[in-house]
Image 1 (cartoon, chains in turn blue, cyan):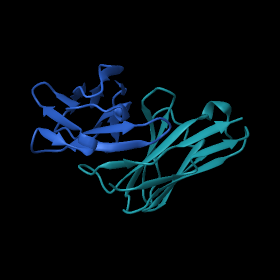
Image 2: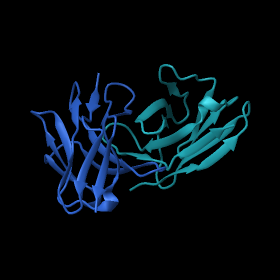
Image 3: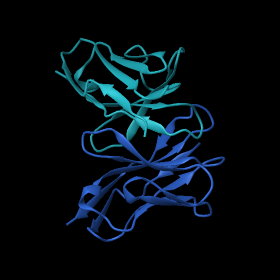
Length: 114
Length: 116
């Protein structure tokens, strides 16, 4: 079975500092990995995805993620955090075995303090 | 990115009544749509997967007679909560994908349902 884990419920960082939101995955084949962000009372916004190719994936709003096959990780990063980045972040893997649904991690709340 | 529109954003209904939530892909044809439910401060729980023109596939534990899903066209899927009860109050989110595999799945803005 495919799964993703987000080990941190919350990440706190000061504005201007780099941020990392962690995600590890477990899949039976090639991983199709995604990051989404959710602001309060809103749907999910797509940030970036890894399908194949370069291990460093660049996405929206200055975010990037590094795919590491040996560590089965897909951590989300940003060089300089903004207060407006404060939100709930979800890592997901697409289930390629059956329904092609997204399997989500538990989510990590990012709090960027001024 | 592609746009998925969900309507209504907020709805209040009385116990025992039914309520319909619409999900539309505005600028692409969605062969597959997904319906999720999210409880406060929790992750998304997949309810069902629907493919255009065929019956929805429900996740284990989701009552298909209570949560009716219709995907009649490539741009519209609907979720009808029948005989709603207060415990059905939740945030419902739809998502849509052009196809399977490598395609990005785009999400609607969600619908808050409150059953009183």
